Length: 344
Image 1 (cartoon, one colour):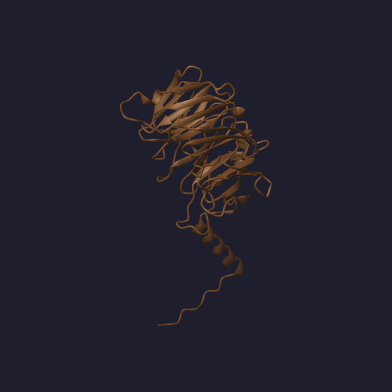
Image 2: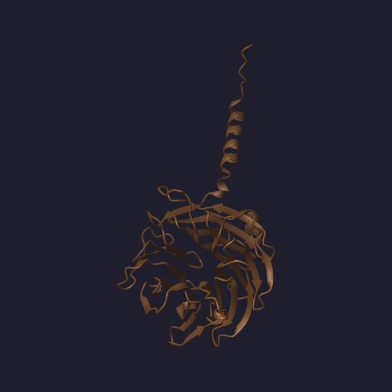
């Protein structure tokens, strides 16, 4: 057998081949990498939330304190303590106007000002809490409970209303997700049985409803109250007109095995931003559910398996989006130029 002759390849061609091979293996390019990355915690994060504009980020890693970070500031601007409780902080929320926040264990809720860090109220609960939401300036608080009831509280007047709409069946249906309109007049709530209800907080009258085949994991209202997003445990995501509840579109999901954890609607852009398990951050078109762009958030370098949940997302200006995940990372990402043009 003759010895084969070595094939000489030009250096430039070899370099190009290696680059193409690397891109095929990683499936990434420069546009898939974050523009900026901030590590807010060294260990696992139990809960994280960002304000509507992405300016503030709340991080909970266990019991108090909750750390509050502001974009561009290298240290937390506030550290909030949940009274004398040693229970884990499991739930966080911010108001649509990014002025107020709430932190919660299963049995306590504290309301805070994001403008000066001051506490605005502390509340002891009589039953396990599953979900919560605030209206603008923290005027109203919505609480979803383990027993299937939902409580609306006017924090200024003290008025309370208990909504029992999810308890119309014999089987107990815990509340999995809630959202509240900016003016506090409308609540969107979802239960374990897949039922989603839109109702008035003045009199508990149901205005619209729809149902998923599986348990609901997330509901979100659009900023103008005309659209809503809902997602179930099997990864099915839907957009609905309000108040009718009529289906607008279903997300055209090209894979399985994820659960939606967070979402932000931007009707003026005709876009939806979602965060999921399996590190996925995704941009969708509202009117047809088409996926426009996707990214994978960073992971904690010391934890295995290397994965992360995207706890919250935000549109950050006209050409960027922001994510905060269970890995303790806050990351900013560029939109494709095409998506930026469609958003303007």
